[in-house]
Image 1 (cartoon, rainbow, N blue to C red):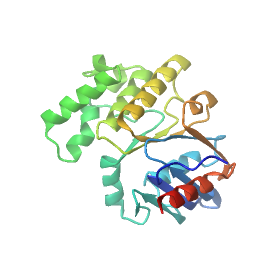
Image 2: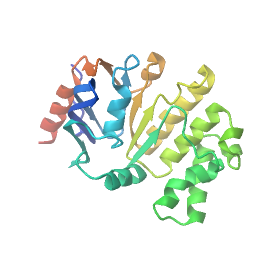
Image 3: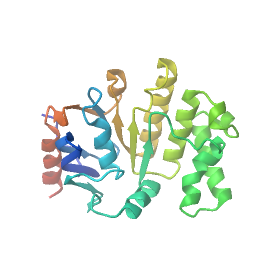
Length: 241
């Protein structure tokens, strides 16, 4: 059994179920993420990894179960408030980056800041700083179609980190890249998370990537294996009580 973390979880999914028609993607999953912890969720394709990430980040609502962030339940709030969480406290990076094709890199990164009301000048300055920190300052004025896959993923990471998220969700962030580009992106992800103290939920099927995390949990057929994470969370609650 894994030792209990010293602090209470920042993010908790408790007994989550989620179905698509007759197909049950999640069958009672419980996962706890501590502040500043990098958790890798691994398993074969179709086992429910991405669905779990989407539920924990508020993109999807669970059929049953609860999601708590910073002591408050978030699965039962409306879509507007869940979207606001993803602009303030959560960052999400998908496998293909999903950058806005019509905007240069610096504007892609600044966009979430401007959407929440920050002035263009300040937003662009912060965006440029994060592009520099992630080693892609040279593509600031380039459109996504003019960048390599590795550059696009680092721009997507910059966009996720620029808002100062407390939790970063990444879904196969290196899956579409060659091993060299993927390694560079992963290194920047880990360094940025360590520097900022951000919790990371990392979905991957790559054992080498999972090895960089603080902890790995494995999914199979909509369940976590081995089922030790609930005990980790219980230990945290006892430690905080």
